[in-house]
Image 1 (tube, one colour):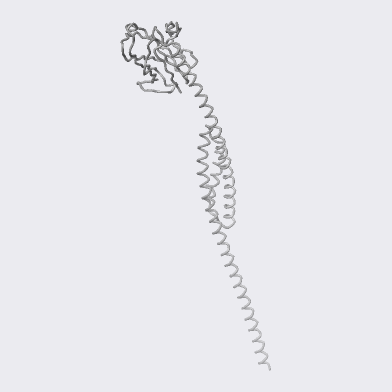
Image 2: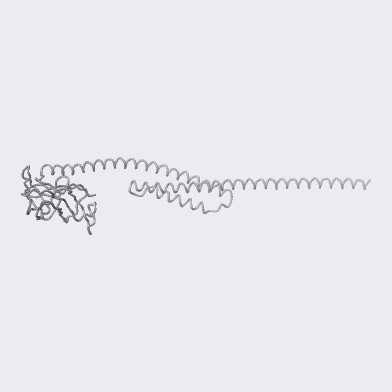
Length: 300
């Protein structure tokens, strides 16, 4: 009986040990399975966040290019550095830091993605506002350009009207053709810029000059602004010419002695003593018998 009892006890102990071993094995197997699943889930999350981070970085690069173009346009439109420049510079520093930082774990990666999403939202807001501001500036500049064009046209009309009035009321019995005014700077180069103008060159043709007007004559160069005010000179020449319509008082900057023939090409070069302001001017050439020719010109 004792041997049988011992066998039963032994069997029970072995059974219990086997059950315990199986339970422990199942426990550790389940724990290992859960750990593998958790690692796989974490890796999936890391891969997904890494893709999101890469996508955000590309979108931020595109926003940076868009902002650069908009900033250049904005500064050209308003003539000064845009107020967004400092703000975007700070954002670029943050983006650069996030791009260069390595994510140690999932929480670090989540934080980086969150920071990039926040910066992207702020970047998009700046780009949207700047795009709207540029549109408003373009519209305002178009209105201003139209106004300036109309004003310039009106000013040009004044000079043309003055030229036409002089031609009509002061013309001599014969007149010049191919009347041309050129504005020169140094080295005989032409210019239309007021601050660079150094000399006026007036040239014209005289054809079919009547016999009684041929011979020695004085030619007078008179240059005025579009209001009829003579340009400044140290020795203005005040004289009277006798046009068919009656005597005309003029102020000339230069007088040139010539001998008129039936047909000839003449020119008068006048060095400017003072720089002319930007605007419209009329150059007229007279002889004692009235106006030979006149032409308006503009300096920017």
